[in-house]
Image (cartoon, rainbow over all chains, first blue to last red; front, top):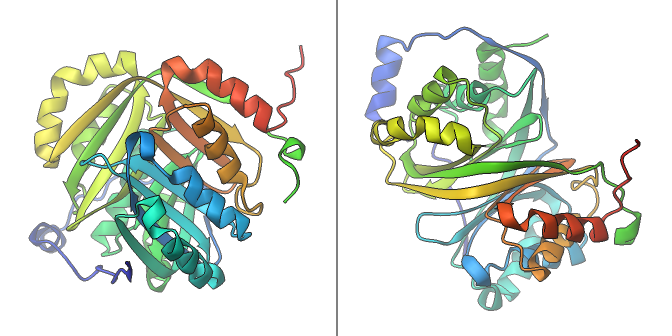
Length: 181
Length: 164
């Protein structure tokens, strides 16, 4: 049921190629107060039933009972009414988490399950709440061929999940897109 | 982990009267969401909540919450934005509220998010969206369920009273 998602950074659209060739306009840098990166984590993205039968709390309970730390959550309803749940956990407990979710696959109604064994959460800290920060982060990374798996803005930090093999590239890209102190 | 009663959190931060906009299945290409952010910036509209996730087939889903007043202002221009973003669906929810739970260190205490989600679910409070990082969790819920959510979270975690 679960499957490992292949990194698809090489999957470039024609638009990206054209933008690279002609050179996209370089916008003014946005000042931020810092960039942090997490230790190596694993990400799990589950497609679950939505609405009243949304089993998110049960998924979290199962992982909590196994003493699995959850360092990142993105949850929302997708275009067909399913719940999309992305979690980041410590990389060394990925197998434990997969086994536990496999056991409960039917009762949880898991419709799809994708995992990435090595990811990093990169967090950037803007000076104030600005709509542009998340967009700049996503555009800068994608222009550079790094496709964040998941992104959120909780409180005063914008965090994105990237495959660990692209982390150096992502950090260098963000250092040129934002003005660091 | 310790008992739920021992987990102290900061006073809740609640933003009410918001609209959640779900731009679903946007093509994954650089700048795809720029029309939306250009519009928000032009009208000086702050984003109260944002998540972006993978929608399969090289598409993305983008969920943002903005003030409903600002939404009314932007609404006439949204159709064009939707077209320029090549969004396959735009879903709206309003009014919604964003509750920020800050402090219980979700990253180092297994089961903390389960406590939060479990308590809200038991009280029949719908969590439309959630963004959780190390020390904070932001839940988008129906605006009319804010008072219930405050009571439930207050029973689940220890929230210090605000000093007068």
